Length: 106
Image 1 (cartoon, one colour):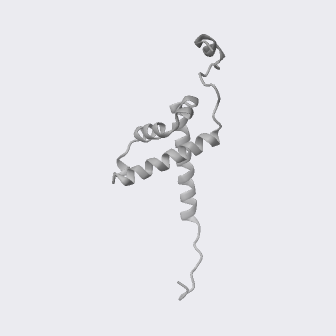
Image 2 (cartoon, one colour):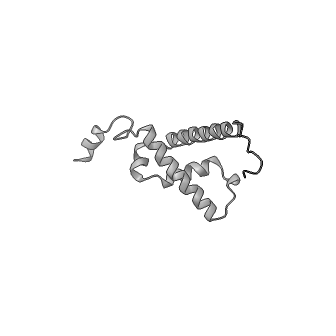
């Protein structure tokens, strides 16, 4: 296919096929898990990492096919939502009453 036909066939967003949110979320979670593992292996201090560094790192770990189908802002938005969900889940877990352990059953 000549390049001019390819350009005409592309949708206005510049993407060939949209990525479903669930698929993007799973790719981002995988990339974030690899990022966390790499940080631990290098003995870095995660609290010194900026948001932009995390977005860059996750973006770089996504497969090229996915990067061609989404924008960096979509990745950052998904990261924000994942962070919020994990924070909410952690808060709920901490607020949940713990069952009493009978003495001597530990």
